Structure formats: C-alpha cells, structure tokens
Length: 190
Image (cartoon, rainbow, N blue to C red; front, side):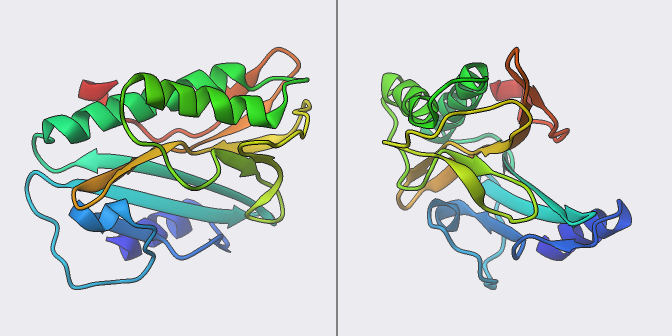
C-alpha cells in the first residue's frame, strides 16, 4: 500500500519523499509506527495513511484515516472529533495568533467529545525542511504570520483499537488560512 502511494506521488511530480510513507491498520494505527509488517488489512478496520512529497525543494505532507467497511462506534466518534479539531484549528489559524492557542483549540475540541488526545504536536511549519517552525504545540509562544505554510495534524489514538489522524497543509493569509491539501475525507463522517 505504501508503495502505491509513493508511486502516485512520483507520477504527479514528486522528486522525493519527506519521510517513509506509512500505512497502518487496526491496532497498529494507534502507535506511531513507520515500519512494514505482514499484517493484512481487515474488514471493519481503520487505516491511517501518512504521506509526504518534495517538489522544487519544498515539502508537503498529509494524513488521512479511512475505514474498510463500517467503523466501530468508538472509532467513528473519534473520527468526528478529530475532524472537528482539525477544522476548528484551521479557523483559528491567522496572522497574529499564538501557536499554543491553536494547539489548545484542537485539544479542547477533542476533550469536549470525550475522546483522548495525542502526545505529539498539533502542527508545524513546512518549507525546505519537513518539520519547521512555528511549532503548534502546548505552551508555544510563536506568532503566526502571513505566508507561513503550516501542517495541522490533530489525532486520537485508542490503544488496542486504532488511531485517527487528519492532516492538512495551509498557507496563512492576513484574513485566515487557505487549505491547499486536496485529499478527501470520509464523507459519511464529516
């Protein structure tokens, strides 16, 4: 599966990859694992796909979570919460906002849904490096400015069941932020 994602990126002009493409399913999607296994994807499981391409020396990345068949109720609830956290934090992303406040917004939305949060950052800058400033994380005092390119990636990991992470790339403008990621979401859950 990861190879197919990398092939598609190459066919669309990618010169390289920001990191190893990760496709994990079921309980494996609840851990930050980027190694190949022999596990087969099964009906009813969650599948987490994390990709990153380099074009013209600049990096982009995105994550989508999909379901094979009907998701379990807890996984569907987690997906809705993470989707709302992503879209809520996108609305907060604009000139002059403190990065830590965007992180708080995403985590607050997850908390309001009663789902567990995540141990990693909510987002980071993108450019010639795959992971740049500003860091969208708890306590960050960095100020968001126009023309910054930001990846936002809130998540929810249910140990032993699976994980949901949704990530978009955005360009900050004086009025807000423009989403540049074109990958669809699970339409029935958003």
